[in-house]
Picture 1 (cartoon, rainbow, N blue to C red):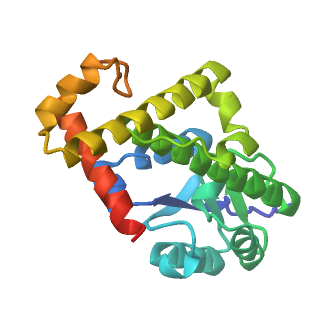
Picture 2 (cartoon, rainbow, N blue to C red):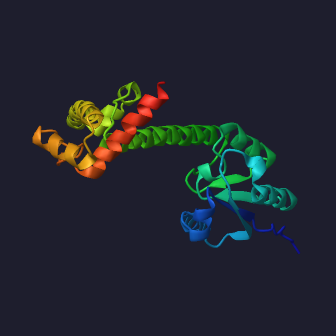
Picture 3 (cartoon, rainbow, N blue to C red):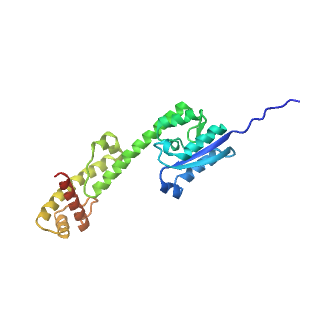
Length: 237
């Protein structure tokens, strides 16, 4: 009688990560990761699931990842993640995990994961984070401009951010910047003569000045600009 060797079904360990406690409590991002795993590994033998609420910068501070890796080593199981950037934000750390698990690592967004594709996708994720930082910085600059200050920094032009905003938008910001600086000079002059914020707002509107968003100046905007003037002068003393 011929006996056939029956191999045990492959075992998998799922790992999830969210960056902040708020995301962890609200399930923001976590449910999406679970949905990825449930979809791509439907019918697979997932023996356990681990979740960290930690930044992806340093794997030493993620106890659930350590536990997941330990279980994978013990059971010769494969670690699975929804997206490769949930594993780590550092390419070297991701490769270290890959080696520690003896290549038993899979990601839903990277089919046929190997050392080359892992390195490539980690580099892409790093680039996306860099661009995200540029976009955030540009948005913060726009917010400052709306409060009466704006400086189109060289970073916006050399990074290509000016192209994203559009030439017309950059020109509008530049015009608003000039208008705001002239208004600030007028505010400083009128304050030195003892005028209050309300009378200064009326004078600015009478002189044809426009607030950063294009409307008339209000008392609160004049007060805000005056405080910025004082902060700027105190920082240069």
